[in-house]
Amino acid sequence: MLSGDFRIEAGAPRRQQFCRTGGFTLFELLVTLVVAAVLLAIAVPGLSGFVNSSRLRASQSEFISALTLARSEATKRGSNVVLLAATPVAGAEFNGGWRVFADTNGNNEFDAGELLIREYPPLQGDVKFSSTGGVTFAAFTGRGFLSPATTINFQLCGKPGVKKGYSVRLEPIGIADVVEGESCI
Image (cartoon, rainbow, N blue to C red; front, side):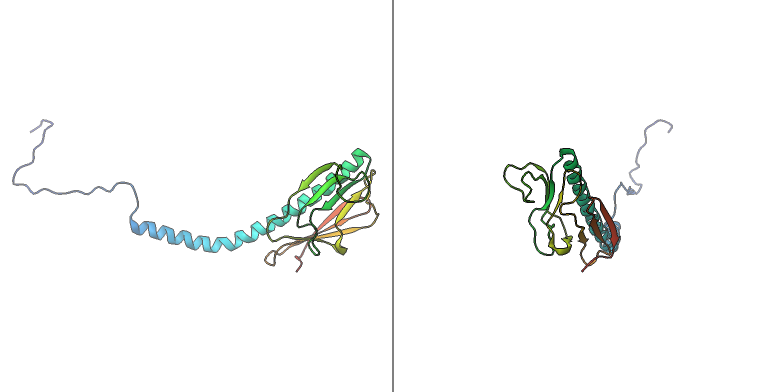
């Protein structure tokens, strides 16, 4: 029988062959899910600390850029520009966000008719942003100096799990110095 046909004999036993098609067994799937759950349980606390630390660093960078914007706008315009806490609360003066505006009447308050240069949203997460002495604004003269000419200290702190914080020292000449240190309580 050399032809391409083949026959099944009537008396021969039939064998069933099982072919495994692509896929996973239930046991393999359950083992994979258990391993993934264990890895997630280990990774999530570290990831949470990383996210909180990054949020704190981003808040510090955004505040420094706002100070730089206020100072550069003051020198560009040749008039007073103020960075003002939007909704100050004692001990967390800048948590509610802040505004940079051209202060045409020199009262360090955002009044109707004054030009809003930029408004920053409230801080997200567990970041506490305060100033020494409860200062709620930084006013720059047309020459880029602080008015009044006193040093202002700001502090950005993370929640207790974050191991660092930032101190921002704004000098009377209008330059900010940032120091990374331990988180405050």
